[in-house]
Length: 163
Image 1: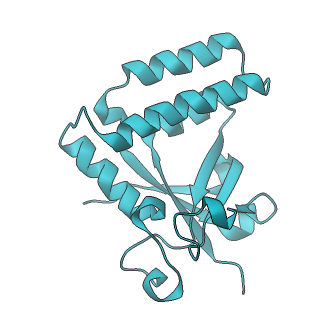
Image 2: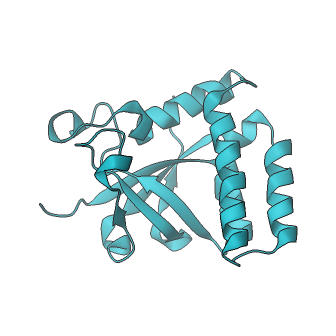
């Protein structure tokens, strides 16, 4: 099978800003060659909501729009940002001060800070760094899911969808 033209990933504004400031404009993303419902994914691959960039985007959008302080998606993002900072600290990529700042920023962030962004990543720019997610870790065994551990800001565009 030929590689996809683009990959899509739904991220939060807070994750974007933390990656830009603390990780040297390098972003960790989970992505798919299908944006989600309404795309060719319905025929070509299984794309469950938990791995669909568009479904994730919509869920975050709705929670932010409704100012949902109990949003499971937002809470999962908060936890993921702190977990990521701890991993970067353990790897020596950031120091304890930066890890503490990220934890505090994440704790104090408002619901609005979690507004969704859709990353559009031309595959040709990440061909050497993209990794296929092992089948056991995918949302569906037949879904096409990828990870990029260090996505340079120059390798993607950002779209905010009017929902």
